[in-house]
Amino acid sequence: MTATVTLRPAAPGDAPAIAGMLAELAGELGEAGRFATTPETVRRDGFGPEAAFACILATRDAEPLGLVLFLRYYSTHRAASGVYVQDLWVAPAARSRGLGERLLQAAARQGAVAWGAAFLQLTVHDHNAAAMRFYERLGFGAHGDRPMSVTGGAFRALAGSTA
Image 1 (cartoon, rainbow, N blue to C red):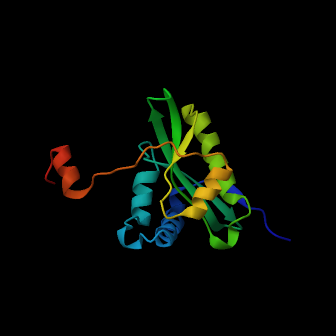
Image 2: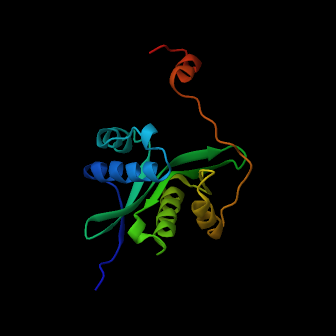
């Protein structure tokens, strides 16, 4: 008999598993060289009263099978709080069984209860056609925004700091 897959909120002791799954995701996206998350940064940033994100894990018999890492987001266009999914990952052996959808549902539910979220948003890498098809099947649609970021020295200059 196959054990049941359980979804549960992540705890500080899960930091090594979370960092490992995020490293797998970065590798799959061809971004392993830019990946900087460690168990220590997960513990520092993901737990406690000032947590920068929330995380739900999918496990079977304590084996991590996937995660959704998300945060509160606000849209002035919608005049509403939402959920921004930073990362969604399911182990290759557990894919195509509805687990990714279950993780997104759990994040949406938690955001609706905790933050009054009225929508869920995420960014898909341009080269990840399989992910685009998955999200489109769930009703996601492109809305014309283009994600941009500023990092490193340009960020420090913008923030007025040379530190």
